[in-house]
Length: 288
Image 1 (cartoon, rainbow, N blue to C red):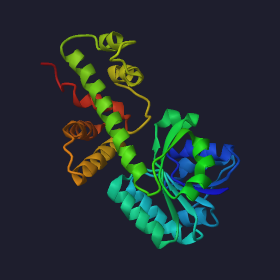
Image 2 (cartoon, rainbow, N blue to C red):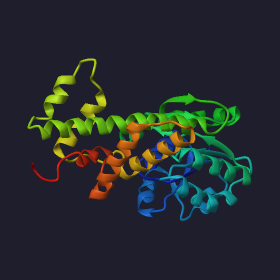
Image 3 (cartoon, one colour):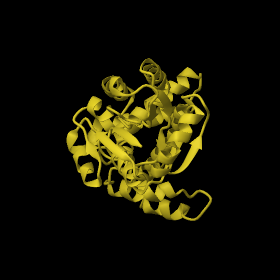
Image 4 (spheres, rainbow, N blue to C red):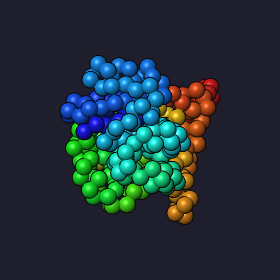
């Protein structure tokens, strides 16, 4: 298929590569052109603007920062897209963001597929994302080979757009709060004059163990993590979770506190670092 891929950052670039490796003709665009140009080495055409990228596409994929970015880019791209083209919206945009994008798709005669992905840089590079898909059955069937190219599993969540986004928020609630819990536990151990590695050693192999603690924990302790998912995007997702909770009259006190931790770490200059650097918000600024 002729695929237009809009947004080639940490997640989008490897997804576009996997689609090209699966034999599809991929044209990519990114707001920062230098992030898209290396894709040419993988047989991907790189366009100068969204409209040029979208011309003649059989499928549109968006993988951008937030709902506002998706709406802005698709406002440029959509007029160049043939009526009836499936639009795989893979970004995390929240419930109200999804509603606005569905309206935009209807305005331009596009078939909206709500299919955000679960995973960070490592799974994206390995083609092992989990696709959380909702949309009309015919469009999901058409896109199934694309989902398989980037992911290890596709979860079909219904015919109507929105279920994929809601489930992504549920899963991000888990990821964000677990990350902050690991960070706070490490900072707590340090603060009471214990080696935080003892925490990781104690849970290893037991019922309280979680692989994620061992993935992020050592880097949190060292104060240096490769960027798998930027902290500023985790903060954005925490806000989307709270927006959804408010809409559904839910009291998610845990993520409210977690949001504040991510905000504090971002304000301290860690926004472009990995989300695991939320640990900085729990460390004392000076010794007692």
